[in-house]
Length: 99
Image (cartoon, rainbow, N blue to C red):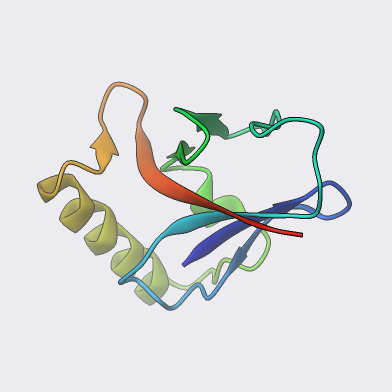
């Protein structure tokens, strides 16, 4: 699952059915390594927190109950490995950049 962001297209979800990986992909060039993106908080240049409730609302997210159940399982599994920030209600994610 990829939460991708571009200055032209905003946030969108790609590879929504892949519950085994989760990352933020910044597409294009930005004046900062940490652009301001609603629903995404940068921890450092390589990691970000993405709101748990943000992902299902993104363009590209399937609307069905089966997908939501799969997403909930992914969030639960991520929590077991320390990838969930309970206080921020966010998933910790690696950030990649693509020019």
